[in-house]
Length: 225
Image (cartoon, rainbow, N blue to C red):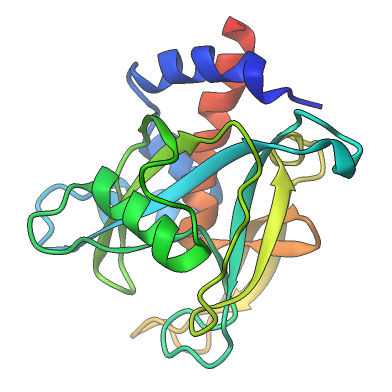
């Protein structure tokens, strides 16, 4: 078990330091993208901007694991046109001149019902370019001192899942499957796709790449604690 209270200060410290970026993203990159550093970099890309929220909170006493560091994942509705049925972090496009921090907190409110003024922002991870969608995504890490009363946006969110942070670091978390490519020029080809097995979910693609860098930051923070 990882206790949230003991993690917050060292994690904030770690997020203020240089992060591994591509080296972490590549470990969970699908369809061979981990072999091409320029493909995942936001530099020189005319990309749409987006942000995601990695929200940490402690489990309550009723869970039997009081104080355990936990974060939330969402399962997208199967009826959505983009990334239907996939596992993701709360997030979405930046509005106008909105900052990634402001966008991540706003999306936390709109998607899962967490008031934007409530979380304590600990820092940000490296931005990640997502070739299929053309988005550059900035992951924001924040915390609450209690488990929020989540209110999922039914049009987008089919389910909310509490994930113990310790599960992300577990020996069996990282696995590999095979999926057919859907990108132009690669149709019909199959590729090994790494994923995180978390709470009976397969977390892959951009979400897994962001969580890979988050995993590195958490491991480093635990050594500082």
